[in-house]
Structures are given as C-alpha cells and as structure tokens.
Length: 97
Image 1 (cartoon, rainbow, N blue to C red):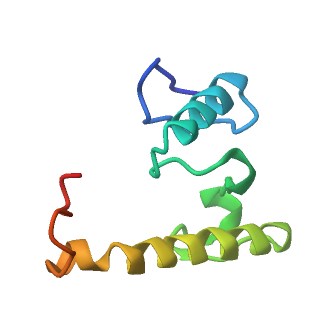
Image 2 (cartoon, rainbow, N blue to C red):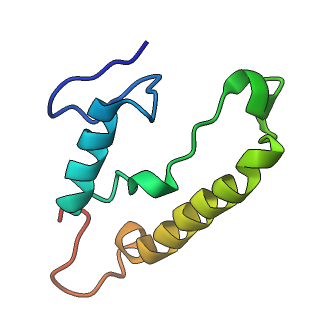
C-alpha cells in the first residue's frame, strides 16, 4: 500500500517505482529540499529480509553497495550540519534557515 498526498513528503511503504513517488522526489530534489535524495540514490529495505530480528541491519548482498552509499551520505551531511547543532555556525546561519 502506498500512502501519497500532493505536497506531503511522508510517503509510507512506498514503491520506489511508483511514478507519483518518483515525481514527488524529483520535484523536491529540484527545489533543493535535502530531506529528499535523488531518485538514483534511493534504497528500498525490507524489515523481513534486510534486518536480523527486525533490529540489526543485514542488507541482502545486492543492497550492500547502495546502503553503504546512503549511510556515507548521511554521515557526510551529519558532519556538515554539526556546526548548526553545536552552535558554532558562522554568523547569519542558524538551524531555522
């Protein structure tokens, strides 16, 4: 089941091949909304097959490269935004922008 509403970024249980989801992701990416990754870097994980005991990430072999790339991006963005979190961002930048 795919939950989708125009202008809503909470796409639940989304089929990444769904054209509506692809359109939403592409639109938000074009607007530079960084909460949405470009369509070519999406990773679809299943709790049943890609997690051990539904808690430990153990991606299938065909998912490993994509998962590593996604996590590398998360770590990079986390580091880049550290200054906003700890209050050492240059003047004029804050977490509200």
